[in-house]
Image (cartoon, rainbow over all chains, first blue to last red; front, side, top):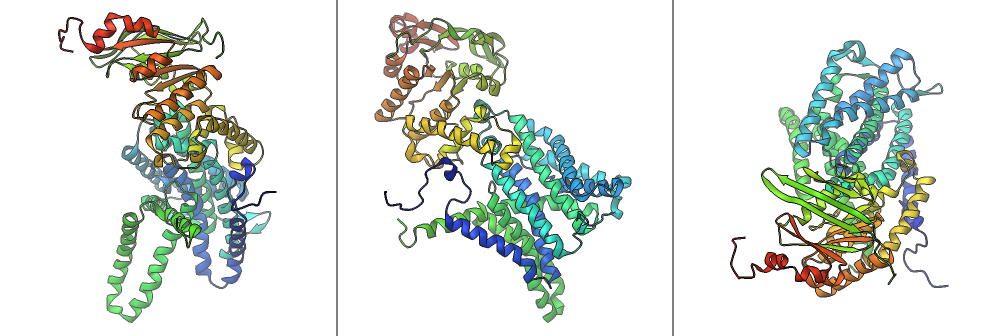
Length: 351
Length: 268
């Protein structure tokens, strides 16, 4: 038998696997173990667990937005509101009809998908900036509904929502919720990855890259744009539902246009059109303000006169970091990661 | 070569196709008929309406008058993706590949109309979705072999040379397994070797796979050698249709290309 050298694939299945080498499979295993061990190690710190929960819940929604904006090229400024639709739908269904959590979660996903598809209809005619404005309209309309329809959403008073529970087990603390959020985040990542490496994902990217040739090879544009809006909103709805049952009380401010912009910055910093980048970008955007707070906290206590300036600086630095990222790393963290990997692949002989 | 390569029935017919944009006529009552299995070329000076005619066949433009008939079915007002499903594929004059994707992904997109699994099995990937994916991957690999692009199958299309991109675009069109292949200047900007390769592929597709080929090309040597029949367009009008020999003798064609036989400049 011939001597094997390097990665030696003999079937197309192997060639299309996500993790192709034993080394990468090993590291994924390590990562999973680390993720499962994380809450036990930091069981004492509610703060850290809260951040971890926020990251996991946000990843789901960010994946949805990246499928729509990064992969299909349809920019959306209404993602925050779609998350809100999921949150309110889930809360209302549970409070009003007593549907169990899992049912609420799935139904919230579908309801949000329908709402997203309705607001995605203009994408047939509108592109780029024009579509951005149209989806901004979706954001404004939905926010208005959140505030005004008090009977369903509780208006600006907020809506109280009981914690998630499965078969009598209550996920009522940061620690317990972590596992629920982790499960759904991993599921969402796998589903998103599978979508983008199969027929619908390829059609999405075709629409993004060249919609004319997409149509010529038999991709119905409108149908696939709507599917993209539907899937994206489904992810947003699931994320919103998790968020609602995690946080316990939701108000319209949780889902305003700033949230939409924050999600856009997650996927831009992480890397448009990259599942991996979405995860990195979400971690980055959630952690950045916390890190800035951790730095400015001790500084302000040492220089109490400067406390106002530090608070203002925090917002400013957040903006500055994003700008620097766009200038120096326009392809996102995923691209940087790829370059690092390529560098080490051939190290120390880079030729 | 297979005997009786060219059938008697017209697989694609245009009847009185008239297309205008605002006041400008791109096509004026163009008639043509392509027989099954032949190489049919469309030639003419720049701006004669050749690409417009392709766009009409593809369904990008809907003509104001006239009909396009494919295998006895009228396709004049169908949408481009419906026409693709019927079996008409095309390559573009300016390369229209998906630049951020690999050659393989581009070609798998060519299989789009043949892949049947739904959204749900795509999300799960295991089971029927995966099996089908592999079947289509095999078909794609056959075409990769045929067009001799094995070495670039995982490269991003945007990084490839012009000649290779043209070849990948033809590969993507072939992945649709169409009955008619519309090629829009497949040899433009190529060197001699690349042109010869491309000619060989077109001849193979036509003779071995029995695919009907429509060809727009400016290289007259190629056109005259390869075509069974050809049509000459000039200012949106079809001024000649026939075998290369017939067309070469046609006086109108000589006028369109070289000017009037008296040498009088007509201001065109």
